[in-house]
Structures are given as structure tokens and as C-alpha cells.
Amino acid sequence: MVEFTEVLQTTISKHTPLSLRQLADRSGVAASTLSNVMRGRSLPPRSLLQRIVIAADLDDRTGDRLWRSWEAARAEMVRNSDQEALFPDVAPRSRRSGSSQPVPRFGQPDPIRVSNPAELTQALKAVHVWAGEPSLRKLEARSGGRLRRSSVSDMLRSTTLPEYDRFIAFLRACGIEAPNLDVWVFTWRRLKALEKPEIASWMPGMWTVP
Image 1 (tube, helix red, strand yellow):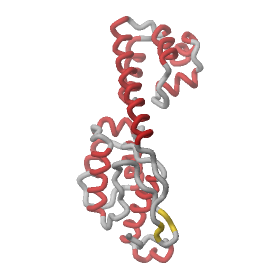
Image 2: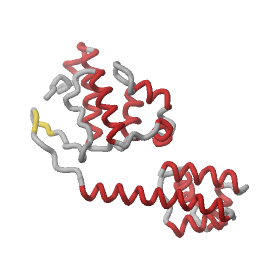
Image 3: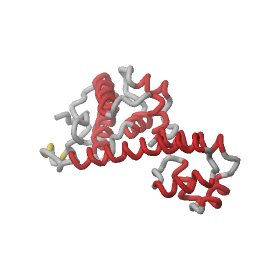
Image 4: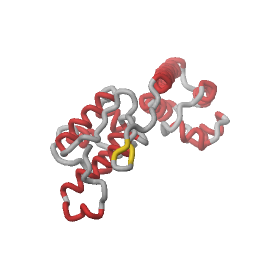
């Protein structure tokens, strides 16, 4: 999906003088819909992409390259949908101290037993592997500018607690979503609380490690 968006943006910027509004008018596609497609918020259906290609007056070679990228993105979405069907999230597991922790998706790393920043770094490396080891460039693109390649590299080598916003952006770029994301947030907050014992009484549950 990210690669298709990059190809689409590059193709339109290089091969047509039309503005987004002009392209929308010429293709008969709502400007808001076209904007979402150009920003990678949704993969356009075949018919909509065909209208964009025609409106942009792309030559055959350029159009073919765009279509190949679209087909690859579509195939990836189908594969992901098949995996979701085979390995759906399951119900919460055993209860601990009156609360429950969600079971991660199939094969997804579970950070609940992390006890220090160095172990958290190892858990983040495991997430990177679980996500298919996307390149730093892809992670940067998926984060919408919240991550830089250098910051991701530093995070995966650090023995200190990562900055919260970058930590969350990295997890989301790797495909970690709610409710499993909540476990990672809990883990980060617990480790942060360990650095500041004076706030322990204000954060119940931060000290409980199963």
C-alpha cells in the first residue's frame, strides 16, 4: 500500500501539470476521495484508478508501471485478509488482579513480562521481525513523518526507554493495533514509573509484573 502510494504520487507529479482539483474535475472523482487516495488512506478500486489514469493522460509505459504497483498492493491486502481470517484475535485470557490481558494475534510478540528498557528493546526487535522486517524507509513512510530512519535505528539499539511518541509510532508502523497496543502502552508506563518511584502511589498497577 505504501509503495503504491509513493508510485502514484511520483507518477502524478511528474507526468501531469494538473492540480489535485483539476484532476478531480477531469476524472469525475470527488476531490476528497482523490485526496485520500493520494495520501495513501485507501486503495482505490480498479474503476477509480482507471479514471485517474485516463484523466492524467498517462502514456502506456507509465500507466503499466502504476497498474503493476496497484496489483501488488491489492495482492498484499488479500494476503493480509486471509491471515486475519485464519488467525483472528481471540478472547481475553486469564485474569490478573481483577483485570485481563488480551492474547496477541498469531505470532505477535507479547511485552507483558518485560522488566527493563533493554528487554523492551529486544521486544521491539521481535516486533520488527513479526512485521516482516520492513526497511527503515518503509517504517518512516508508514508513520506519516512521525519517525525518522535514524530514530528507528537508534531505538532498536538503545538500552534506555524510548520516547513515547516514537515508541507508539513504531508499533503502529509495524502493524500493532488495539487492543494489543494497550499492553505495550502499559509496559512503557510501568518502566517509566520505575524511573520515578515517587509517583508509584499515583499509578496503581504499574508495579505488577506477572
